[in-house]
Image (tube, rainbow, N blue to C red; front, side, top):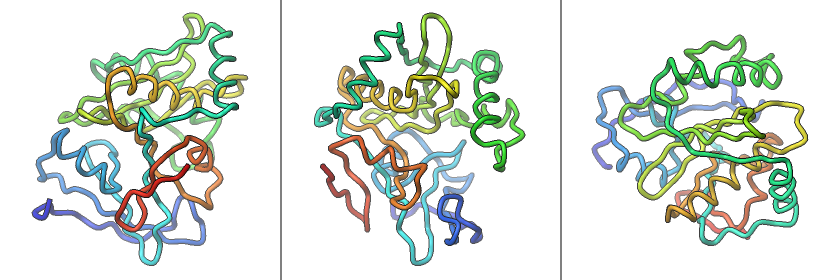
Length: 237
């Protein structure tokens, strides 16, 4: 770890806190990466984007706190149980599957991804989208990446890109059919926790939690959880 060489991005406006500036540390292209090393970096507040691994490095701000759930300790609340039971009554199901290649992934997922971006992020830098932008989510040849697919009957309604290591699932990005009565984002997390329990995976990583960002508030509802704050994992119940 001590020999790892990292690049530093230029400061720019934060995507989550408009009154702040963001800066990232990221792995350089020549750095050798593998799943074991990535798992170590996950425990140090890092995330993956394409082939690169990054963490926040913002002056005077530590609001981006990685969140993880210990699968065996998780206790669903009454609302999460209602969401789960409602889905089951709607003939909802999920499965974890591998993306064989970009062509098959595009054919299977792009219509849903494009619809989601157009609905949720039409005014952001993600729009207009492209098949290449979507495929970037699972581009990391050194890592096992799978997709958690959600179905109602035989209709694909949600996809979560999941990084898989020996001891963790890390949720990278979720896109889904918008305007539906079922809470697909919540269901994705509950399904990953159930899979982790079944497969003896210790942790499910949910990405960054930012206290003053409404988009991130849902992550605080999955308890007990741990957050990476000031260099250590702290427990929240």
